[in-house]
Length: 374
Image (cartoon, rainbow, N blue to C red; front, side, top):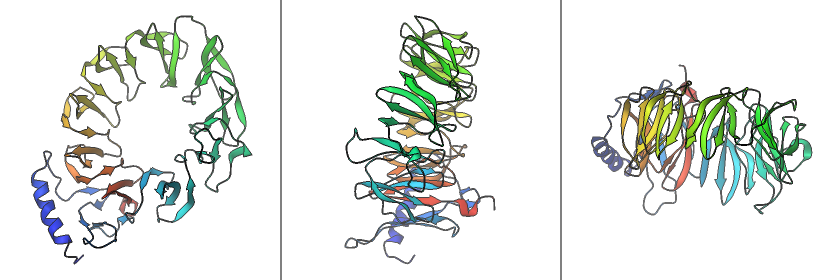
């Protein structure tokens, strides 16, 4: 803490705070953690990594030595070193060696991966012991969702469960993950919904094309390049008059009409007019919107929490959103205050009490679990 390189940075940080366009939260606290910190940079002739030092000793900070880090998922973090991927745990132990050219995060206890260097190489699912699920490879694998994973063989799709058993035959031209008990499928001239027992609810209509997931009891469909929404019995609840429709999130669905974006309620009524250049779904009561390549945040009444004037903003997760200002990223709270100033080159969303970040071209993580609920 007595490094001669630390004092100049602190002076710079004080100047930096005075230039922020959003207010700085005094004595920022998240999950009972004191988020005040300093950055200690090595000397010009040193090979030592940069250090992130929090005042709160309960906050764990990893070494900042990785080429890339994903968000935490099921207590493991996907990491990259020397061009290969592996996994570390929250004590920074290597729990899966850096030997993969491609591997995803863990979902429902399994990660999709590709064998070998070839992009067209066989794919499968690994558990945390490194065992190949069912001893089988596929042409393509997709993350487990709600206990089931989609697989592809010879351009046909099906679903397997967490034991590796095929529960929906690999015979479909398209199949989504299962949500609310059903997956959307297409097979030859048929389309509709199929459940984990392989029971189909067929939808016959030569001009309606089902799209996306069955989500929140609804299905998006296309009709002559326009989008609408049906219920689980294939009754139209929002007519196909929109250029794009998302899925319902927190009671609202985003839509595109004439290159502008807004939101509809569950009856199809416009509740936030189409005036944005792009937008994201609502999470935790707020949505990110964009106007003229600048990002802001609105509530469900369409009122701005933050005017669209920032380079990028994520949706809120666990009360924090990632905001980029002047090429650097930090966290704001729901009051629109900086709780972590924008000093990072990259920053992932705050998930499961952990966030990952990049400084000086290298990645590390911060673990706030040690002071949660205390």
